[in-house]
Amino acid sequence: MADEKKTVVVGVTGSIAAYKAADLVSKLSQNSLDVHVIMTDSATKLVSERTFQTLSRNPVVTTLWDLPEWKPGHISLADKALILVIAPCTANMIAKMANGIADDALSTYYLSHRGQTMIAPAMNNAMWAHPATLENCERLKKRGCIFVGPAKGMLACGTEGDGRMEEPALICRKILEIADK
Ligand SMILES: Cc1cc2nc3c(=O)[nH]c(=O)nc-3n(C[C@H](O)[C@H](O)[C@H](O)COP(=O)(O)O)c2cc1C
Image 1 (cartoon, rainbow, N blue to C red):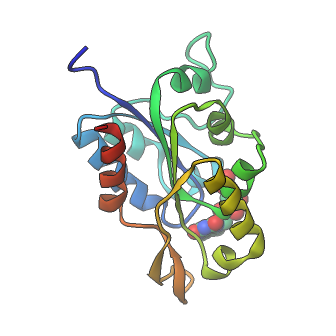
Image 2: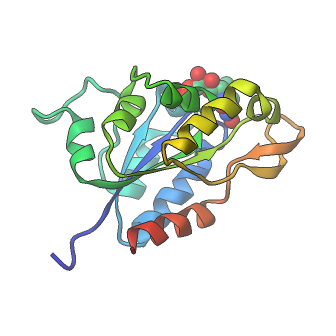
């Protein structure tokens, strides 16, 4: 169908940059994409689920266990999503993805997702430079995950360095490039 919207899943994790994900979701929705948000428990401590529900115009997934339909939500979404973008993506979520750990809604969704995966890391510069994080990122890149950022600049912890989440406008452009192919 010509006017059928393409589905993008936005994963939001517990980084201080989680507020930037609201802008990303807004931009994606304004570009006629069907946006579904999955938040980790830590992300819900930083930004309200209601913010993403309103901006995406879709229910937000925060748990594996609150199911509105017979089919688990992560499987229903995986059947139709073109792109999974995790922005911001914590060091913890990168580690879980690299190791195939599926202990919450977002990491479980990642394993069931068959489309393209994009990761926008956001963390303190020491966490980004840690050998564990670097090795995990290499594993994910080898599997075809696209990394956007992190950018250099002033970090929330007060130091300057690599670790800022890339700007939502740039991430949105990269998603549209894939969606328009
Ligand atoms: C205020 C606050 C800000 C945080 N910011 C980050 C961050 O930017 N990047 C990161 O990797 N972890 C950050 N953390 C730590 C993560 O929240 C923590 O590792 C958590 O277990 C991540 O869970 P998740 O990956 O399931 O969202 C922050 C913690 C707090 C309390």
